[in-house]
Image (cartoon, rainbow, N blue to C red):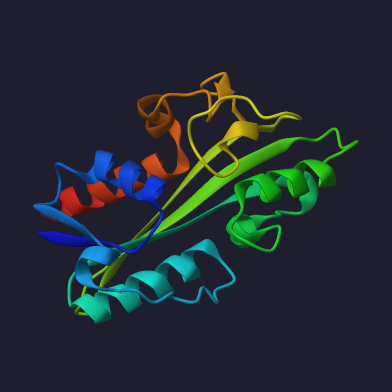
Length: 193
């Protein structure tokens, strides 16, 4: 089966291909199918945004499309940044997003957080499969590590005992929200065979 990844984020593409690579005959990107527009994420939940993106790309390409919407959910901030994680500080700038997050958490003792990913695999016939993955940790005060992207340098994984930015790609994929959601998707696809 040929699959379109409904994202332009090179980091997500790399993560998704490394996990899904053996499961699909061919995985193509938006650039490869000639899709140059932005799909507006108007949903209130990670699932709604993933569904909007996957449906739009599947309709455009007439191929199965896989989209995810992911974000950081911080307990003490009532779930912020949530669906606005990528544009928390007003733009898609990781440094500014981290700065805003750490500023809001100054003098806050509760640092519990989780990363959430909702994944939708949408077929041209309108059927879709949805999975959600979560990983728990804490927000630390200073960035550590040079791997990863987004909030990875300040997200301390209690399972790995290090930040996501200190973890190798393999380590992160073994526990990450996106890795878990993709593995659940593979399981659901295997069960359908």
